[in-house]
Image 1 (tube, rainbow, N blue to C red):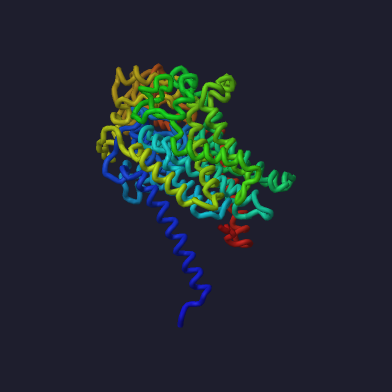
Image 2: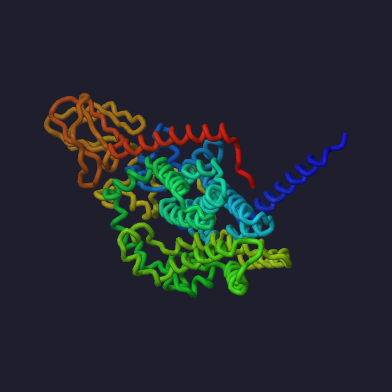
Length: 575
């Protein structure tokens, strides 16, 4: 029996979609081809992420959730790094490591998977707008075939920002489904809080920037639909509040307890005034391994948007200007993304320096050039929209752009620094975690006298007690609790070789006693004469417990609501 015409149509459509995904995946893997080789390589932050993941994995497996304190980090004296730092990529890394990958392979896998998702969601967003496969494919490919993306991966080793590339097209796609058509997609609406929460967990700074442009785009869509009314606006607010509530377990303690870490004292090191980019460097700057030094382009990392991206948005800009009404797509949509691109490019230059005089802005983003991620996204969207509008020569223009991208950017997508191998055991060693790494001291408690402690005592191999005059026996450690039997002939001071931070508590013979930070910033307490059962533990503070409760209630509420809507409406993501 021969297949029905409907079956043939469906089969052809499935093959077309599979071919599209294969093409997108192929070009993405070509961009990241060097990551498929064994070993790792030198970047600004890459080695830190591998070592952090190793200690994060150990903390998670010991029963700590959410992970806030790494007891083996900072030469074994501990750090509250994940009370402040984004953590979603590390939870993903834990899953990959438990699946059998090494820590190095897990970090590389997070980069590769996030890159594949970035391209996929950019394609889905563009295709939802244009229903033009060619334009959507080219725009999505240029989203990762871009100098700033290559810089994040191969120069900076910025895994958080690499993951954040996923969320810009994903949020815009969901916004288009939820607010860009006469009848809102219910599942898209309910997905928004979850995606916003994941974005916040994925990267602190870029989630704030991404949420801001998501709000602008949602309002633009509602205005385009003449639908700036109470119900859709309330749904938008619901999405925002839902994402904020779901992620409260992370951001609320980070904000409330920020005054206790050393980040505020690093403005002299990471001064935003040193990181504004000259316009000439946006047009072109040499590709090399280096740190952020925009005032000396011959020594700095590159800050170019990319010649192909400049050509694409310039052609689109001229085309929009010359035609009052652009057939095939909404002219206002192109103007919106062109405006977003140029505003974000303006935001990396010294022209916006007066805005950074506002302390809250300079405290959020001390590297203005991070806005190049927004410029990369919006310029790729503009190129995709422009190609979708072409009635003739679309294939020729697309092929020309992709060919030029490969010729000009091919050398950017490769390892340009020293390669090395790092075993899981080496990543866990306390010495390796601090050898030459100054950067992570920013998350140490304000009172931690880290370098003096290292100079005098060296690395702490285990979490154990020290006492000036007491005798310590039967020391045991379980998760974040260390206990010992202490004998004091007179009043004695006992310290635990972990830096003090709010949440450390001590008890003797079942009764809580005060703790304090000693001259090195370590957890310390005083005991009266006698034999005591001493226990020192790291627990959640009241603000952390409140934050955890808010997230749990939100999780249950939004989870139940999402399930009910799915049962009622089914899957209605229509492409």
